[in-house]
Length: 159
Image 1: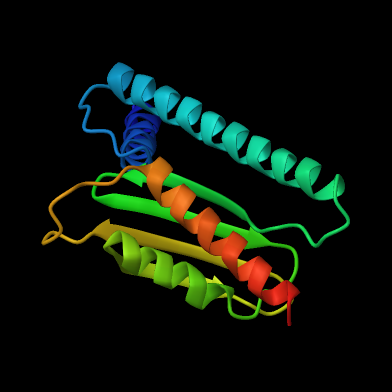
Image 2: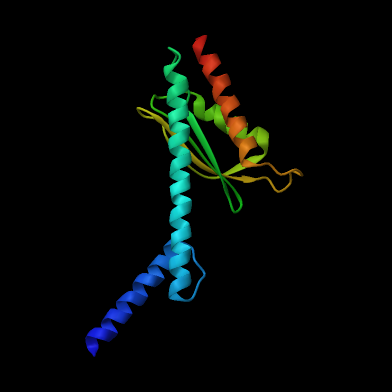
């Protein structure tokens, strides 16, 4: 009897953990599992998109003798965007260029993690400035960051 109740309690705990990890609001077991399955599919699609972006960046960089440009990915969040910029090499001055692009778009940086040691990695959460009238989409953010990277790259070639 105790064993059955213990198993039930452990199962309930694990379902609640799964529910919280997947941001599910479901109450019954089946719905929690369905939400978890959808969450896993979303993660698989994100991984696929990131792998495609990396493959595209590698193909474009291997076709030229130049240093490859950093890879940019942008995801739409509930209120804003998750912007990732990655380069295998250190990129002095790139952070400033990217932040200026955010400013030009009217994006406020709500949270950011940056590493500039041997490689360059920026992960930023940007929210739209409420006072700016027009809204922007993920594609516009990605394009603006890509232009900032291209301009930064061209300025560094001449130095």
